Length: 250
Ligand SMILES: Nc1ncnc2c1ncn2[C@@H]1O[C@H](COP(=O)(O)OP(=O)(O)OP(=O)(O)O)[C@@H](O)[C@H]1O
Ligand SMILES: [Mg+2]
Image 1 (cartoon, rainbow, N blue to C red):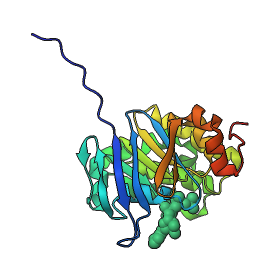
Image 2: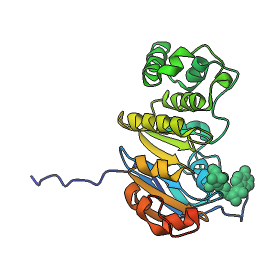
Image 3: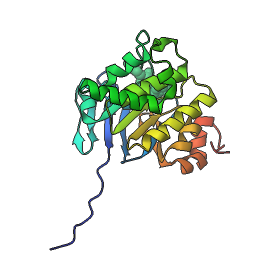
Image 4: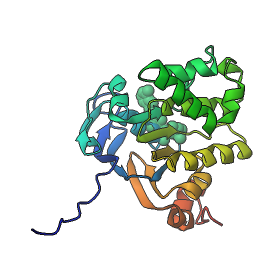
């Protein structure tokens, strides 16, 4: 009997040479590739209009892919209807409009849940353990919460379905530095519960500080890939953001 040959792990998400856009013949993504491995936090950075949101929307089936592929745990989901994404174990928190403002915190969580009522109760309790503030405000309309608390509701709702991959589009937008730190600490906690994370961010410094790897998108393609540490130290990445050779880390 021969010894078992170790197989390379299948990425949670692999996007290869993706061309996608809102209207035919106007590609916004022009051959973008990235992957998220088991247990990773992967940041997607880049200037305004680089295509970061379009990339996660394309994975979520909200923007049609014209060519290339999107694999979740090795299986193509290209062309999959958005409402079927949850069945593949991928959850998506959009950049805007990610909570139902008139519904209570708890009703928002219930909408994200799957399965029998007992299971739903148990998962809501887990979310309150992860986000104690939400337990305090469970009966309050989500629209009355602060920006940071609303972001927590959006993340908790996405986690209700027990995804293996969480895609977040700019969770730090509009938050105070202290709130950004809190939300990002939660992402580390979520990752330690066996959820991989694809994190689209404008806040490059904060994202690179917590990610395992990152990609910098520009003009619909990944221009740089590296560890958070290497990207922070890269003069080219600094130049793309700051218009000079200053590093983000300096
Ligand atoms: N609904 C849409 N219809 C047509 N074009 C769009 C639409 N949404 C975005 N675009 C275009 O796609 C390009 C990339 O936009 P996208 O939102 O992906 O950028 P982004 O990297 O997320 O930027 P930001 O940092 O500002 O969020 C832009 O040129 C934008 O004008
Ligand atoms: Mg965006």
